[in-house]
Structures are given as C-alpha cells and as structure tokens.
Image (cartoon, rainbow, N blue to C red; front, side):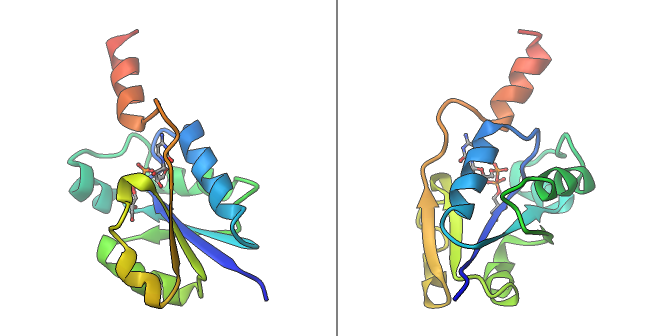
Length: 132
Ligand code: C2G
C-alpha cells in the first residue's frame, strides 16, 4: 500500500531548512503533498506580507523533486479536512509546531521533525536588509 505524507508551510524566501524538512518528510512515505500557506494566512500568522507571493511560493515548492502535489493552505483550522481530502497517512511538521496537531492522530500519524539550526526566513530578511 502506498503511503501519502502531507506537510505545510509558508516557504517564503525558500532556504535549505525548507528543503531539508521537505526531503525528510518525503522519505517517510511514497508520495508527498505540500500545503503552502495563502498570503492572507501568512499575514494573519506573522503580521507581515510574505516576500514572495503565494503563486511564486507554490511554483517553487511544486518544482522540487521530492514534491508530488501542492495546494493552497487557507487556514490552520482546516488541517483535518486537508489530511482527509488528500488521504494522508502521515502529517509532518517542524518541531516549532511540536504538540500542536496531536489531536489529528486519530486520522493519521503525526510526526514533528527537528528544525535545521541557524537558518530562518526572518533572519535572512534581517540580514539582507541590514546589508551585512
Ligand atoms: N523549517 C525547518 N528548519 C528551519 C526553518 C523551517 O525545518 N530552519 C521547517 C518548519 O519547521 C516548517 C517548514 O520548514 O515545517 C516551513 O516553515 P515555515 O515556512 O516557517 O512554515 P510556517 O510559517 O511555520 O507554516 O500549517 C502550518 C503552517 O502553514 C506552517
């Protein structure tokens, strides 16, 4: 039986931490589906517009070898619906979300992977804007 993995993220200013979590998620199954946060959801979550638009972020994630399908994540509250729609067997999130989606373990396995240290979109934006 083929195993479908689902993961979510904004993936703004795409960096190696994003790549690593996507590759490790893909390695847990046969097929990887990625929900990319809508611009509006990012604004609500982080209080800023993403640097790259939703269409650009979707195009980047969809082009990765490890990714089989992408869709737009409109709301954090719709996780259960997305898991069911995509018939996901495993939900993977970075451990900055540890414990947050445990209630879904009646419909799928929930796995939190350690974040790649010392890199983040916020730090990159700060570094670039400081000219360092
Ligand atoms: N990530 C990582 N290592 C980093 C930075 C990010 O492993 N150094 C992971 C995060 O843990 C997450 C994924 O990369 O699993 C995407 O990170 P973000 O774009 O910051 O995602 P976020 O805005 O937290 O959105 O429904 C949940 C949200 O959509 C997650």
